Image 1 (cartoon, rainbow, N blue to C red):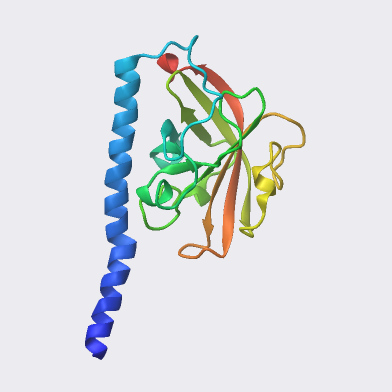
Image 2 (cartoon, rainbow, N blue to C red):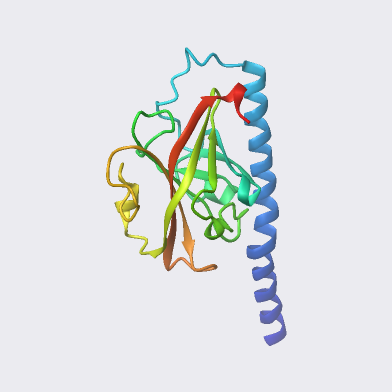
Length: 206
């Protein structure tokens, strides 16, 4: 019985740490390819697309690229576990800013461990590193400006238009990345802040 129980525990850990990554990464890769293909096939007109509106929960609408980490991950609306995060996607906190908004805070969340772990290495980001959000018609580049190493999960101030704990004091166009910390724990949240430094049509993105 002890051997059986031990094997069951080992299999559970393997499933959580390894197999969920395999499954979620496959789903995220498929969602990324689907988004890029849709944008190529439909070639939306920037003059007619409203990118400040709301999207359905679980609907993919952008791609997050972080060159310093080699990260390219689809962004979907909402932060539901089964519908978004456990599929290896980056989730957009509903009600927070959108990249096209004239001011506001685009707040994103993703797993740091298991289920594709898109935000596994965001603790490595340093001031000056670029965070790029690519939509159907535009590319928005943010520059990392600060972080909170750990804050309680109840700290909703980071969702504000001027995120709490950030170096920002006036209205602007910001991005906030959130994930669990320390690794393999949900005790706190690691927060990374960025500020928009460039906006251009997606066709002219570098």
